[in-house]
Image 1: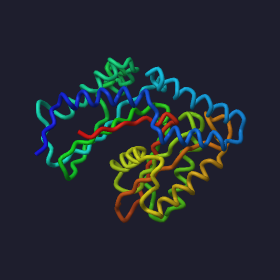
Image 2: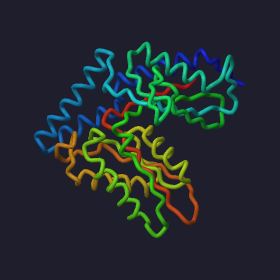
Image 3: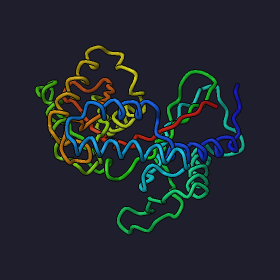
Image 4: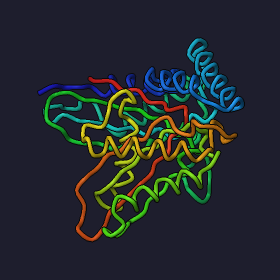
Length: 280
C-alpha cells in the first residue's frame, strides 16, 4: 500500500495550477511554429507570430499566457493500492487550487451560483474527475479551461443512421459556428460514444493527449486527419481573421455506447492549450 499525504497533493496541485498557466506545453509550441511556416495568409502569419511571442514572454517572466486563467479541470488516476492520508482528496485538490490561484496571482473565474453570479474569490471549486486504476501511484492532471473555448463546445445524441458522416458534419458545424470566439488556432477534442453524461468527459480527456502522439486506433487516426484538413479548409484562420490554420489538431476519444445512439461531444480548446501533470 502506497500512502500519499494530502499536504503533498495540495502542494503539487498548487504548483501545477501556476506552471500550467505560465508555460505552454512543448508539443503545442512545436505545432504553432510549424504551422506559422505554412500559413499562407499574411495577417494569419502575423497572428501566429504574436501568439508564439506571447507564449515565450509568459514563460520567461512567469506570467499567465492568457488573462483568462480558466476554471481548473482536474483529472485524477488513483491507483487502487494508494491510501490518501491526512484528509480528503477533493478538499486537498481544492486547497491546492486556492493556493495556486492566490499565490500565483491568477484571475479568479469561478462563481458560486450559476445564476446569482457571486465570485468565490479563489477559483474553487475545481471540476474534479477521479478514476480508480490498477497500481500504487496517484497521477494528477491539471487543465485550466478558458471560457471562450468552453462556451463554443457542444454535445449531440445522433442516431446510428447518421454514421461517421453525421459525426463529421456535427464536428465541422460546431467549429464553423464557433468562428473566432475560441481564439483559433484551436485544438478540437472529440468524444464519441458512452452516454450523454460521459461523452463530454471523453472529449475533454482527449485534450490531454500529446499532439505528437497519434491515435492508437488507425481508423480514428485517419478520421482525425480528415477532420483537421476539412476544418482548415473553412478559412477561419488564426484569431478568426482568415487563413489556413484554423486548428492545430483534432483529438478523438471513443467508448462503447447503446445500440440506438451515437453520442458525440466537441470540446474546443484555444491555442493556449494549457495542461500539466504529476505522478505521486
